[in-house]
Structures are given as structure tokens and as C-alpha cells.
Amino acid sequence: MNKSEGSVNSVDEYLELTAKVEAKWNFTNDDVGRAWYRGQQRRHWRLVPNIVRQRCFDRETEDEIREEFAVRAPGVSGPEPLPTNSWDLYFLMQHYGAPTRLLDWTESPVIALYFAVRDNPGYYDSAVWMLDPYELNKQVIRKAEVISPSATGANPKDTKRVAPWLPDRWSRAKLPKDPVAIFPTHIARRISSQKSCFTIHGAIEDGFARFAVGSQACLIKTVISARAIPDVRFALRRYGIDDTTIFPDL
Image (tube, rainbow, N blue to C red; front, side, top):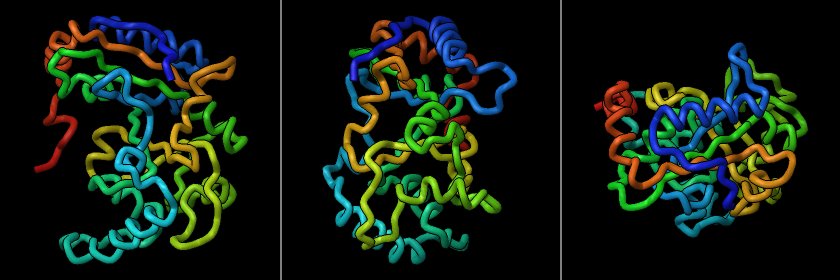
């Protein structure tokens, strides 16, 4: 994927650009849901989840990882009870760095920008991807809505739409091919502070490729120039965006 909306050299340029893209996607100031953002340290990194990066992107291996987590997590989780439903347990796996098909996004453009430049020494370009999750879901599940599959009281018809992306362990059900956008239950404080949201990959490793091209593209990349990285990081600190706000725990 190499579609890029442009290159920016400051926080102000970046926010101006994201505002233009949101306007092009017909988001308004009154909308509760807006675009999603994902910051990546290097501009050439693909939009793939860590289960792909760790080369264990197959159903059998994933089911083994899920089972291992379910078996061992209760003994090290402390006094707080673990989730009992499959989705929340999967979100918890992502939270603790286990390989999953989830990809982290945020509803905050500045939080995504922070993750893009946080560990970049300024030797290479970073990038922030913008996603219209409602257009993505319109194309994938035929409904322009983002669903919380594990939320109490969620519409069963809606949760049924995304259920195929997390089949029961050891089932023979095939995964859908494309990714879909979902909201997580706020099972951890970081999910709230980082305004987290997720996409979950289907059967195709490079599942986002087709959504970055064509007349119905709902995915755009913005590049942060290497030479601007130190200044952008300094400006974000001035605005109060740093590790203490992004990671509000011990």
C-alpha cells in the first residue's frame, strides 16, 4: 500500500490535513463517531497485526495461543477476575502483547501522531494511517456501523454480523477474508486513556490493501518527514501528550 495523502512537517500541518480528510469523508463536528488513526514508526510498515509479524498467521496456531492464554492467565491475573466471554479475553490478549489478529487504532489524531514519533530518532519517516471505519464496515458487513461485540446489551443481530471474525477455538469455521472495525469493551485503563478501537483481520494477511485504492478508498496514509520528528515530539509534549497521559498506570 503506497497511497499517501501527503507529507507534513509540524503538528499544525498534520491537524490541518486530518481535518481536510475528515471533511472529505463527510464527518461533521456533530458526529459522535469520527475517523480512526494509527501511528507507525516507519512509513513503509504494512498494516498487519502482530500475529502476522510473528509468522503464526494460521487458525491452528492461533487457537493454540488462545487456549494457552485462557489456561495460564487466571494464575497470574491477580485479584481481578478475568473476562469470561471470548471477545473480552481476546482484547486482553492484545493488551498484554499476545499474538492476535487485532490491530490497534485510536479515535485521537494526536495520540496516533505520538505513537508515530515516540521512538523514532529522526533517521526515517514515520506515518499515520487514517481509516473511515464506517465505510470499511459498510463494504465488509454491509452496515455503516461499528459494533461492540462483547458489550452488555448489544444488539444480537449486530454482534452476529461480526461473530465470524472470532470463531470458537478448534471450530472448522472459515474466517471472512477482509478486516472489520469493532469497539472493545474497556477492560483496561489504557484502552480508555488511548481512546482505543480495533480492527480484526480476516483470512488475508494484507487485508487492508484494497481499501487504500479506488473510488471507495477508506484508508489514507500521512507521512511525517524524518527531519520534523524531533520538533513534532517536542510540540506534542508542550500540548501535554506524553507517556504519563498515554500510559496512566504504574
